[in-house]
Amino acid sequence: MRNGKFDRSAQDLGNIINLEHLNVRVPDQQIATAFYVVGMGFTRDPYLMVGLENMWINIGLTQIHMPTGNAQAFPGHSDVVLPDLEALKTRLASVKERLAGTKFSCVDEGKTVMVTCPWGNRYRCHAPGPEYRDWTLGIVNVDFPVARGHAEGIARFYREVLDAPAGVVDDGEGRAARVVAGNVQTLTFRESDQLTPYDGHHIAIYISDFSGPHRKMVERGIVSEESNDYQYRFKDIVDLDSGTVLFTVEHEVRSMTHPMVGRPFVNRNPAQQQRTYQRGRDAFV
Ligand SMILES: [Fe+2]
Image (cartoon, rainbow, N blue to C red; front, side, top):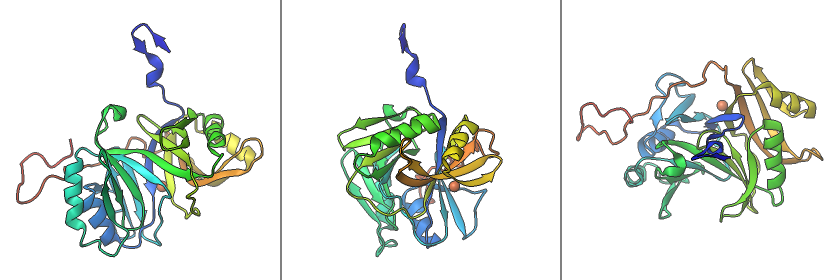
């Protein structure tokens, strides 16, 4: 709603405050380090999950969690904003040999770079821009392929159960449900013929009204885990009339009183090298 010179609704968020992390198992932490830390230029969380059983990777205000185990992959792609795509391509070229024989690839798409991790997770890398406001590093969208005809029902699920703004869009790449999942962040459920079975990966979101969606999900029997005081999980996105499952992806749902809310993530400046070291420029700015 425009009132005078300000469009107040342009700043509205819904109930999902933040898409905080993606979680995928990886079979090899050394290869994960070569790809995510050296190649992508992200930063290993120095405080939590610092052993070989898991690695948390910081990407601005967002994370990817990688427990050691059988490989998992998100079926579509995630959109990531990074400050310098040329530097990204150079870093990835430097790990190409180390990642030979894996699913790793890096394809220059012109405005964006599509990078595939050693186990098939795809990251579309974008340069900063007005659509990302002041974000220059972070996960800004996850794009899931869903069955034809399901976008409308999925948008309705997020609107009515999660209380998140959601609607069906056609953005040139096809019909999709788009859900507001934070400042500059979205979830996209794109109608597609390329569907793969769900392999157990998950996303984590923080929501403001914690009990309202929980009550509605309990009524429908779709809460999949009562984790603790501050967290529950669900997997099935259902048609609100028929109860039919429209799509499955585990959501770790956290309250805004969760002990980790707003946890500061350490991010380094990946341009810093021993040979060309510049004092005072170690941190990502
Ligand atoms: Fe998680």
